[in-house]
Length: 328
Image 1 (cartoon, rainbow, N blue to C red):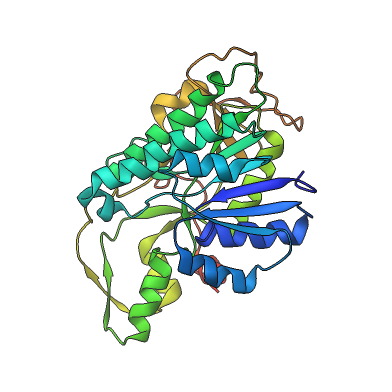
Image 2: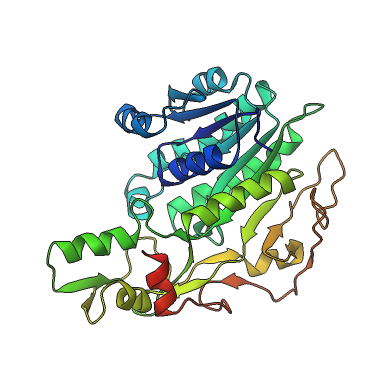
C-alpha cells in the first residue's frame, strides 16, 4: 500500500505521528515521509531518531493553506493528525481551537484537492460524538468537513475519510503518564474526577494499524470506528498504583462521565463489520458507493436502530490485569 508512495502527516511530531512513522518505516518502503508541524524543537528531536533518507520535515501550521499546498506537492496519502486536543484548554481558548481544528481541516482539504492527493484520512475522537465540549464540537465540524469534501473533488481522484477512536494508552496529556508522574513525586492520593468514569481504551500501535487498514478499505466519506475495550477509572488506578488512596476532585470543564463513538441518532446509518463500525455519510455524493462492501471485500450490515456504542455499556471491559499489561 505505502511502498514507493509519498506520505504526509500533519501534527507528525505528536504521539500518534511518531508511532505511525516508526511502524510505517518498519512495515513498508515509502518513497518519502513528510512531517508537517509547527514546533521546530520537536522536529529537531524527532530527527535524531528518524533520520532515514526518505524523511522530510516541514515547519508549518495547518492554519496556513499556502504552506500546506507547498508541502503536499507530489504527495499520495495524507494523515491529518494536527489538532488542539486538550478539553479544558479548548473551553478557555475556543477561537484558537476553532482556527486549528475547523479552519485547519478545511485548509488540509483544499490543499489535498489542489495537489491531487489520492487519499486523506483525518483523525477524530470519541468526543466528536454528541459533543458537550468545544474540542468535541470542533472535531465534529472537522469530521463533517472531511466527509463533505468528497463532493468538492469533481472529476479529481482525491478521497477523504475519517478515523474515530478513544483514549490512547500513554499518549501525551493522557491520564497514565500523569498518574505515574504524581506517584514518582510522592503524592499520597491520586486525583479522580469521578469514580464511575469510563473510557474507550486502545494501544497506540492498534490505532496506527487501524489507520493503515482503512487506507485499503476506504472509498470516501466513511467514519471508521474500531471495536475496542473500555476501562473503568478506578480499575486503572488499581492497575497502576495498587492500594493507593484517591481523592475525588470533580469532573473537569467539558468532560463526560462516559464517551460515545457511535451515537444512537446515527444508528440508522451505522454499519457493523467484524472488527469495526462505519458511520455512512448523511449526504449523497456525485458517485455511487456501496458502503456495505469495502474495497478489500469485507461486508457489513446495519446495526439495530437502538444501537449506541458507549464506553459505559460496552460489552468488553478490560480487567485490572489486562490494564497492567497494556500500561507496561
